[in-house]
Length: 226
Image 1 (cartoon, rainbow, N blue to C red):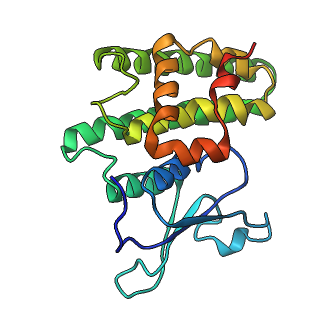
Image 2 (image 1 turned 30 degrees about the horizontal axis):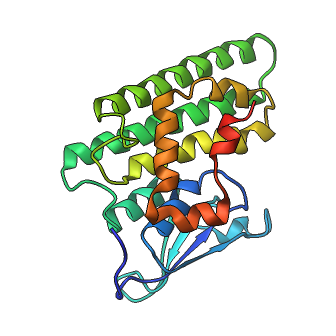
């Protein structure tokens, strides 16, 4: 799961927040990759990004012609890193289950931000849809964790892409999304079951993420706070 001496170096471009690049930060750290993070001036640097969006991953000299390999979109970056550093299972169906879960989480996140700036009945309706989606994804997480023996892992016994993705999902809502909606944190915390809490503990205690936790701090106190 870790990089070897031939692994290229990476640059991850994103804002200095807990957001769409958190899983990529975890993957790069867990892989012991050589990487740095850039926080582009925004919106000044927007035209200089491939699609005018962040995050962006730059793999130095990673293209076939020796130029930098540049990749946009958080999901594409995560999948690329997860496959590169073998945090995905080799079985295609098992890998697809992890990708499916990540995409469902993205749908929940999109549903939240879609309703954020609505007003009146339209906002009430869309917020209700978001609440239903959040409740469903938390139940799916819990069911998968129980099926896997409640060992703090969604699939198997080792740290996986899915584990990091789910950890980052809850962390983003409680530490970043709350800046857009102060009432969201208690709602999300109310969905975190003992099984999900065990996953958060397992992720933070994994030796591969020791450096990540040391740098970013533990998420657990925020989850357990009133």
